[in-house]
Length: 89
Image (cartoon, rainbow, N blue to C red; front, side, top):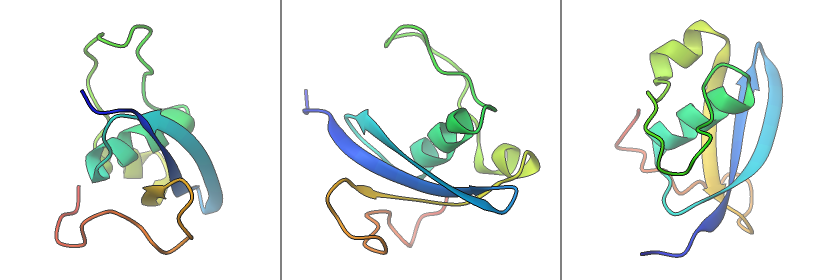
């Protein structure tokens, strides 16, 4: 099992910039959109690590004002996102 890493997620909520740090084993665009939605108060944060919840999708998050989600590994400079530009969630 991979070790959890720290990631920084930047996004906008109703046009205002927001940012937070989260520790996860893996990160991708879909995860970033879901956790940005949780930080904005839209998504549900599971109470237990193995609890299965429905993830918030990009279109659903955008309906509630979450936009411009990007993520990077902690310690990297802004603009050095690890997300794959070929995939958009």
